[in-house]
Length: 98
Image (tube, rainbow, N blue to C red; front, top):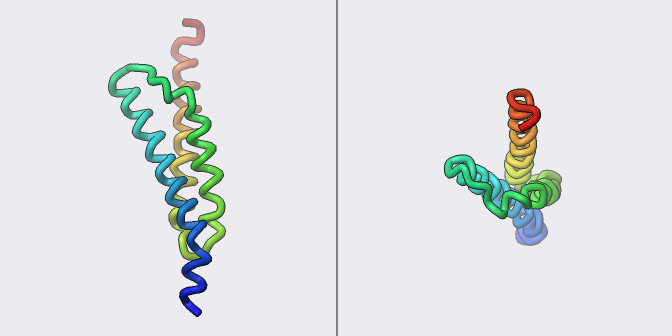
């Protein structure tokens, strides 16, 4: 009986790990771009990676066994959205018309 439950929880676990890995990849690219002061080509696709992490976090959140994976993936995605928004607003307040 227990093996049937383990086999059913395979997709939410994979989805949770995908959301975490996409969030960590976004953080990696963003930190590299900040440290090198270089606009990387993959930074144009931030919304794709954030959306991937956001979408794949939900199946993991609704599964009891891997809820923590979904919460981590969703947390990283929401953090990156808020961080980009706050940095944009602060940059706009300092120099609105470059």
